Length: 477
Image 1: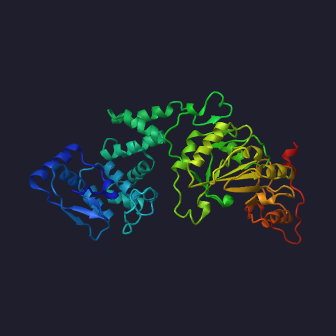
Image 2 (image 1 turned 180 degrees about the vertical axis):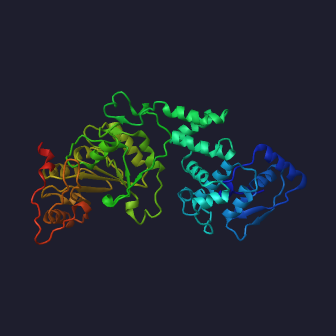
Image 3 (image 1 turned 90 degrees about the horizontal axis):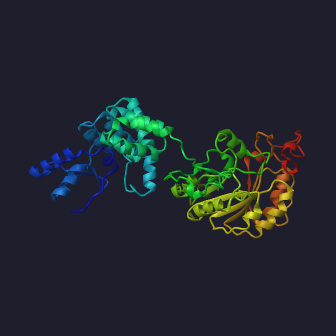
């Protein structure tokens, strides 16, 4: 007998208990299979337990393709959610899982990418609202909302416990509120197996336990190596860039944060001090869990036609090549980049000399920041030694006219001004500065990218500043 696959709609319905299955198996053994196994898109849509019983009994099942007037989803709901003796929580959880499998949902798209359900055709089904889902499952809208929350944010162990009927969906939602981390959820589910009613109390107790730091600051580095950090099975992925400030990379990734340059116009320092002042702030810090993001992130389908979809701005909140950065941090980041050649990793530094001491794979683009003329010589000396996928310059902000003697060293040049920061005003360079610096590279085939914060808006009658504000002159301090 050929072993068949189960349709995801079928798998969303809770399994029978052992006693229910044995009763069904006994009935089929005595009377035979009275109802056919229903197929849809080459997979079992309904009759999962009848099929398993036939396999165990050695009985040849019979099949029919679903061709009813309703959608396959409505058919499964009608047969299973309302006919079987499921609790309200089980019905809500099954419906939430079914909603997640509808065409266009994140869950379904992800499973397609992973190849798990690549042949599933759900073109006859459409997304439904939360109230419609609640009505189909025969539950209240608040219960449906909690089920969707558990389906989206719960660990597999917590979701399975609700599906089995061991834990009410409202209780599971409280566990997620107390413990957002899925590994912690799985831990309390295991602890509460003997006493399911105690799971919320156990979750709250777990949440109150002191957590080991998931990061190591430079100050702590002497006492804690990477091997001493608790590395959970992280599902972290790249951050999606949600604005047009960095159009050349759709993703950012910051396994290392913090910097000691003390540039007056630094946006990264402002962000760190705003959101992380109570933890690591802008002190150089490594985040071991984030090293897993390149392995967990899926390459978009259009990455071959849109290179920004493949590009990752790596360590945008730090300078990976700063003289203060331990070599072990650089090695850990490089291993993740080398292991994931499907991505292009773009790094940027104000220490090109150290960057020139390293070897790079083709999927790493090395850039250096040049804001004042004094940085030009160091950049050219270093990049005459660097071999990588793309060698690039970030002239942002352009704070004075620049002259390069070896423009042929660079494949790509990004030019811009400065957005307002806590220490500096907004700044747009004069048009002639931008045009003159760009023209030095155009004759050598470099690509030029003009940042939106550096677009000149000059016209007759408007006075253009001849120098940048004194607040930008941090190198003189």
